[in-house]
Image (cartoon, rainbow over all chains, first blue to last red; front, side):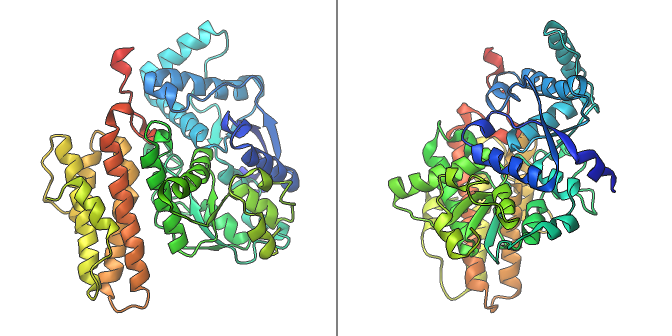
Amino acid sequence: MSDRKEKYKKVAYYHGCALEGTAQPYNTSTRAIAKKLDLELVDIENWNCCGAMEVKNVDPEIQTYLSSRVMSLAHNNMGQDVVMAPCNGCYHNLKKAEYDIAHKEKSREVVEKISAKADHPAYEAGQVETIHALDWIKFGYGEEELKAKIKGGLKGLKVANYYGCMYTRPRHIFPEKDQGGDSESTSKPHYMDDLLEIAGAVNVEFPLKTACCGGAHTLSDSDTSTKLVLNILQAAEAAGADVIATECPTCHSGLEMHQIRALKRMSAQTNVKIIYFTQLLGLAMGLSPRKVGIHENVSNAIPMLKEMKIA
Amino acid sequence: MRSVADIGKALDAPLPEGDPAAAALFLLHSGEEILEHWLSAHDKIPTDELKEGFRILALHRQGAKGDPSFNACRETARELVYHYNLIVLDPDHEDTPNRLAMMRLVANHLYLFVSGKMEVAGLGEFCCSSKPIRLNSV
């Protein structure tokens, strides 16, 4: 058994706030997959917000502390050395906190000071490894093993894999990426492509896989967000995709909401469906659409999935 | 140099027909112009240098210096170069019309991203490398 397979078999699960709200189907499908693959997710008790975008804009050191507390809980309270965060925002912020604590004296001072005040051990760099759901499945279960789990598969479903901006940027907080071999690429990420290909999808060439979805401005400048999303949807359709696979709750919600808004405000109709990659993997393994929360998506993919005999 | 709005309008219009290489060059130049606007708005003189043989990559590098959130369009700029190369190296390829259509969408994304950032710069940077712009007021 490989090192990572052993290490990722049981992980501290930090789903964050989005997966309890708008991204509930991502949570549902992640848990369903874990069960199917016999991977253990241990919820972090008494978790807090990672600092998201809002706190970071007010005081980045507070965001570092908030993320560090999550990692401290995993290490000190649960004895876990791996935190799995499926949300790109959480994943990004925990990785950023890890980097800052390892490299910035000021970050360490703030974390130690607030941790002491909050009466819990301060997180120290290197105590846990933060991974994304993509790492978790790719290495915690293994690609060869995943092949054996596919039942029915995705039957040539054409997929544009959309990673969004936070999974790979900024590059320096992801020292394990761009290392060649089986490491992830920050300029052309491929882990989701790899997993969905195993599941029977045909990945289309999609040049906007890390492009901005306008998520941060969805309320302050909705029109810009709608135009950015519409462009992504149109590019996916031009690439021949039936589905855009997502792994970020902010991107996913943005694509779903602005697809509707583009139709209402700009009379621009697009038909490509938006589905979390964990939902697609679950379907490929023979789980029912309900089990992976397809009915909870805004983007109604059920007729298309039925027509293709995937659901 | 065209205005930002004029670049947007030109990207919405049908591409010139008959010469794929010229159309690809038009899209590449549109991308360069968008980045020139970004740099000018930040009191920088857009470079005429090339990076990996392309000015657009040098312009992006210049724009991202000290502003890591601008890296969010790094791949978009690189995809423009990639599509440009595909089209110019083999303009008679059967996929050229599709490649041009995709290149137009990529150029449009760069335009939307940069023009959006220029409009709402006071509201905060994009999330990937959020800049603490309100730090001075707290």
